[in-house]
Image (cartoon, rainbow, N blue to C red; front, side, top):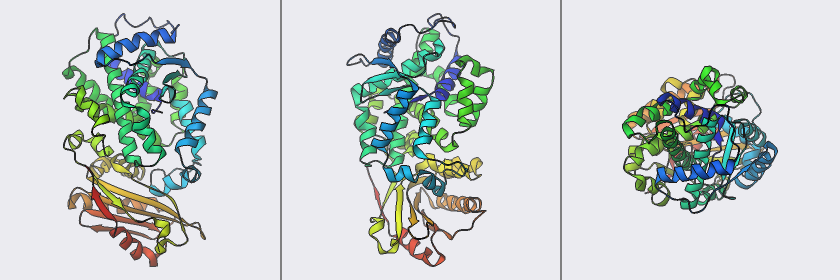
Length: 449
């Protein structure tokens, strides 16, 4: 399943697009309704294919879907794609890693249902080759952008197999979370870009040159969640129908790290694809066929994708087979990546410097373990940085982060810099810290091309 098109994201895109030009007569009058979704889809499919210069292999089906049906769909997705151990300990994991500092009970399935049912207007399901509409009272301008976005996912799927590109690596865990997020940014960013081209052509009568698009793309890419909420609470939000107030209210209940990741996939992906497409659509196709992005670092810094600059990958033995970790249960191990390091830093009061500090990222691996006797938690993290100065900057920022993270309950912690690597241990006992650091120091580092 591609990331469903959130109401917040499509509202943002439509506001930015409306700011770029005056709507033309090709859009229905404000009071008009979408009478025949399939007829509208067929028309927009033809327009999207013309803009992209790539034909649909077959028409994409459109169906309305109730919230109850969507909830059942989400249940199936969670069961298929999320290991039970992660779903069970989700709140514990994201708190220990540092993505979340709130007090709410983050029960995974309930949280995902709450996020998706409050924020999703429509989605394309590759397994059924169908575009599902969950909210059929969208104003015409917004309906057009949603249809263009989701139908383009159908075009992507027909030519590049979205299930193989994203879900297969999620099912067998062959791709890290950072790689999956990077691929999601490609899929959503390209669909948002084509949606932008479609909308501007509808407003202006033709696709504008890149120089005219640049300010709109840049403006969208710089929006964060708080700016988005402010915009939707303003008079501009009324453009998008009566569901906006409920959408914003629901956003206030969703942890920031989820919203930042959701919106970032569209908007950071958009500016990335815009940069790649400057060299032609053939270059964009390499993102699927030849060289998928290796990290969110490449999404944030397209020049690193062009240069095929990849991060270090840390590998260590299976933790539960190591005598050092006798009595410890591994809850999860994965890769954060530059996007989520930004979020961790911002979550702990370092928002002003988060982007600068995280920009030096060059690879990581982390693990969260729980002591089977005491229930105590342990975080291990090995991180690599572009230069020694970047490593020093991160280590300094992380020491200050720890003062916030454990302000109410001190834990044994250790932050050690080895050249361009920074190793982190949080938890366990003071007596074990040196051994944990030594284990992290022995992790194997490799580069992939």
